Image (cartoon, rainbow, N blue to C red; front, top):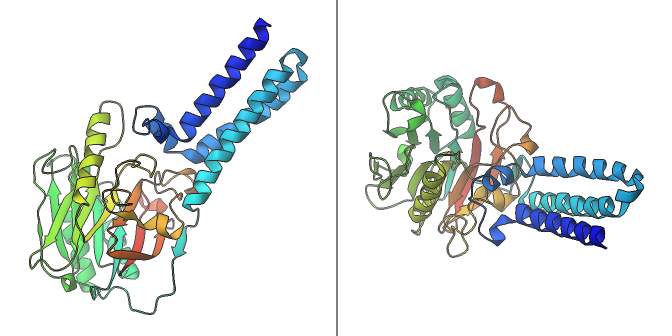
Length: 347
């Protein structure tokens, strides 16, 4: 009798743990140390569940353990199925298009804007590679976390030589660590922009550890553009990370905002930070809109479907996502992040 009760308690505990890990936002644990790191890699949770299921099935041959192992195997299968369903619902397509497009991208007409984001890890891919990708993508906005002003200027010069001039804006929190700099390139066709976010660390003026560039049009016409870099959710930085995500949500409270960059957060981590149906503030996720939100952008040395989708392009309902892709052909160039490219059309 006691052994049956103990077995039932073990199964119930395993089931409860599985539910909480599959959907921690149910009780607000999605941004807590340990769980936040695990749910960033849901595909690996599926792999772990499959491995546990195999081991538990093998243990069925041990007769005294058979009922308990069978029940735990069912829990493992359900856990794997839940995580699989979540990833499939978010989309596993590397490049997606919401609808056929007839307009020309890259002209920054105000009705269609292409956004490129790439955390360059201090400029490791080289200015020529970043400029080529931007030109090939016909990017109107380029968000470059972990990128210095000097490097961004080189990219802008190469883009100008390629027929696409860009304004180069940026902020730096450190003259020594390149990871604490963020740059933003904007097509002059969008008008003149000025950086509005503060040069000092922390709210209310900026994110805490690495800068986020908030640029607003000088004439008040056009979207506010935000080049994002939230701190990584590592031990010792969890409070700053949560603060960064809250601050970013506040930046997307307006009617016309485009955000792009390294959020260091998946859609799970951002749960509860949206308003009016948004994911972050009023902003919607471009990848989710077209079925690519489960494709990993970090680290670049991990297969696409096993990585963490922590780089995003987001925009207010003013904009509709027409295409999104994660670029995996440049993984060997030295950055630990993959570039992402999205095209947005004004509704």
